[in-house]
Image (tube, rainbow, N blue to C red; front, side, top):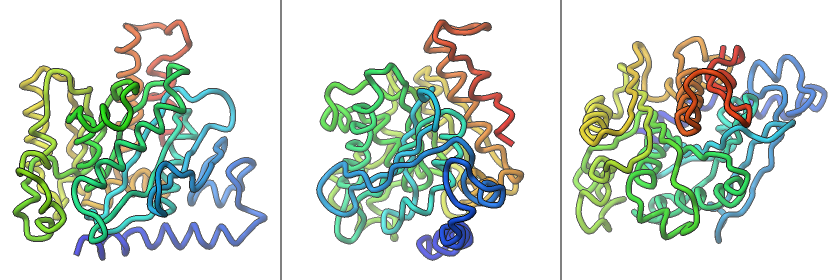
Length: 317
């Protein structure tokens, strides 16, 4: 069911990508035409595709970068698909949106069921974080983890269960923050009918529940959930918010009226941004988190990074 919903919901975006890709006079990440810019991409972005981060055809990623200057931050984005489907090429609109605003975006494919089961796809997520750290950590660029649906589940696990990143990248800095869109953070995937086979390899249910790993060391977190989501229950976001609050972790929980499970991620795309302030909320969270890390309380940081440079960019609209 979820697989069909995602395929249908993203079909329009995929069709636009395919159509524009066949129009060489219009398409290109730099010097982009007005029509293409409106539909998919944005000015000032360059992309490197199909970069290998491990063995196998599913372990490849796309990297979106600002065409000029050093990125202010990096964002690892893990898409959803019920752990059974997904294609990084469909999320070009996500990578472009952030790179155009000075944030490098890493969007990987990862291992799927039935060929693989838990925790392989979570380990893939950790390996993509380690890859991202190797690219940006020496430059002092903070790395954020974001995900939608199943991707938010994997992203939350590598953000809160420190064993994954310790194994994948022992020298990698901890994530600067976690951003979850419509994630199933608290449900038991080992007993749920549509996921019990995927997570049958978990030694116990809590090993696959991100909420079970929240601690005082967990990164600042932004949780977004649509109030018309009929796929992932709102209680997952509420439970994670409560757990983080109890541990004293900075968390912001945003409930979005009239937004469903797929609409929350599609609202990052240019044609759908009017539906919900998802991009704006993420940019503000990244800017505020960077300011807090730098000890900024008004004014500019020594390196020129300020929350206004990300979260209050007029291009969020």
